[in-house]
Length: 256
Image 1: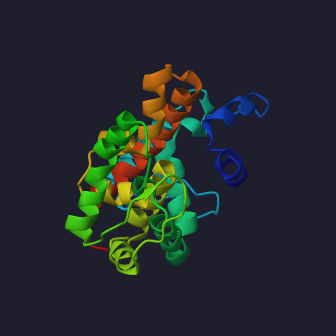
Image 2: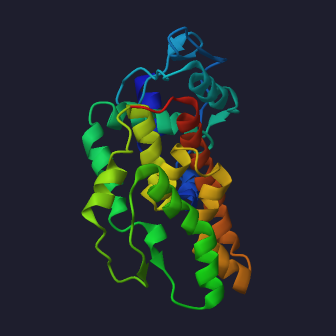
């Protein structure tokens, strides 16, 4: 099973537009009958443990997340398509890349805070200014009220140095638990904003509002000029990744 798992997941691109390349690299055939979860939340295929690309047991942190991974394996047809398995991919990345090395992951999230998306505002037109405020002001209000972090707004794309105390306060909210940390990292990358991800993780935003905040500028442009179908296809793929990260954050308790 080693070569199979390494082939299926290790080199799979996550960009949805790369999916066309799978036509040149045939998907692996399904080689198992059923998927189940063991009593330790390990994912099993026909009773045999699934392993990550780094050869570690694929063990979820709780029964609910294990079942989500199991459901993805059960849902596969004749071929195994990693593009339809966002929770499995997230679990693999957390187990292989976060569990033993959490500090670099936390530092990467913290790096977003210094130039967070929601702090950079348009100066015009008024409709865009209002649109950004509608979606991003609640995130900054969360930072002020919950994290005691007061970020400074900038106009345009010129870098704005944020107060050191705001960065320190927001960094304290980055979790230590590797599964929550990995999920927060994924959400930060998907949204382009550590503050949006933290607001969701603390229950200050719904998943839909967090996603809308991440795409406020894109949505405004589409309202003005019409739908961009290619962009929407990319977004639909990424939203599945977002849902997987959100599920981990929703099912695991805060505090670490």
